[in-house]
Length: 116
Image 1: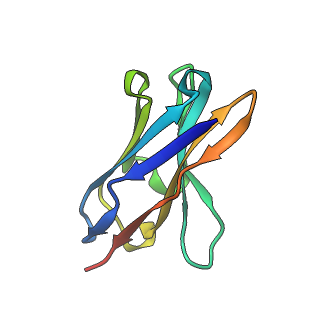
Image 2: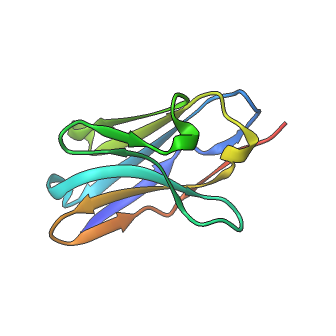
């Protein structure tokens, strides 16, 4: 089992920045992939960014060049640096972690609101 706790969400003006954090606990040594998804009202959940065990990363098209995912395996944490935020980035952001033997785990989500 893996537990995930996100932090760092909040209200920011367009063009601003936020940094989200996600701390994992439990069977952290078994985590392979960690990432971020988001869900806006009335929309389906979408990939924001993923960090794979080989060090590679993947980003959703709408955030490429603006968001950066990073991972600290020593702290069992993953981060999302969000720059040049737009109103359409407003959503609940969820951290997830993939463990091959037991499946996908999700955090409770953190609200990001981009508004002037």
